[in-house]
Image 1 (cartoon, one colour):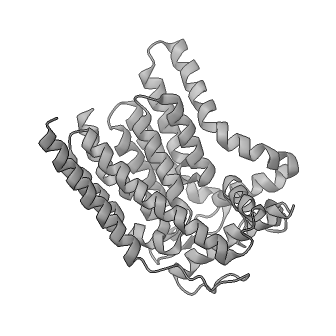
Image 2 (cartoon, one colour; image 1 turned 120 degrees about the vertical axis):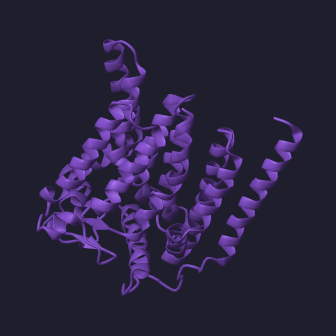
Image 3 (tube, one colour; image 1 turned 135 degrees about the horizontal axis):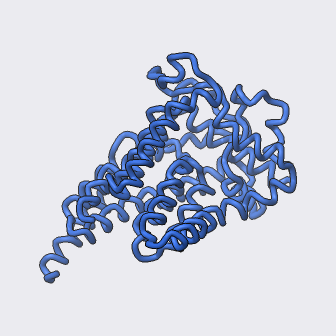
Length: 342
């Protein structure tokens, strides 16, 4: 690469980062007036901020020695009463901040917002670098700007939800697969430990490992090892809570699969419209994902496109839909273009 090309690429990168900085300035601040009570939710924006409050609440309970997962034991596994449904890592992070003196929601929100903004800019930079390394610097600029300024990511910035750190880890994991497979698998596990939306991408990692191994015995061993590395961090943060109260933890994590339909928009999923609820209501989504897994096993689509289709199936067919889910699709719309180079 010539010095002129390097200068041009760096100029593009500076413009992309400048656009990201403009977003930080323009983004409406999260309401910091909330004290020890959840915001009253009358819109999707306020519901998103309310969800963040409950993450802080459950982490604060953990800091004082209370098991937040035990709240679900009085529920019916259908009605959403703001149970903790994420794996424990987020709540442990809140509890750690609480122990360090960040004990009010307002103070923790200021701290968390800085994390969200850092991850937001980091994802834009990653998209630029991934495209540039594949020989598509202009596409990289588009990807960074598209990520930084589209309505879905701006929405998440405003409510400071928990999606961006998990998305960041997922993208880094996918970029590192060809060169640092073990690190890639651990980072994917970290993404799940932060927010397990990408859990449905797990079969793709196992299929890729199987296809890239040659002999049958090697394939099986490599696939099992991959599953172990993916599950390492989620297991490490979950085992203490399984020991503490296994029923409460398992029911809390499974609640997302049995809960009643809920949506930020009136466009309901097909299962809801035909009257399917609970686990049967997830069948259309799972069946369509299975078709995508078969296509992947046959080598009919690349790595980024596979992830995009699985996340799009989750977004469009899951019985629960929140606006922040859309941010998961955005990075892979541009990255899927890179599959043609493989």
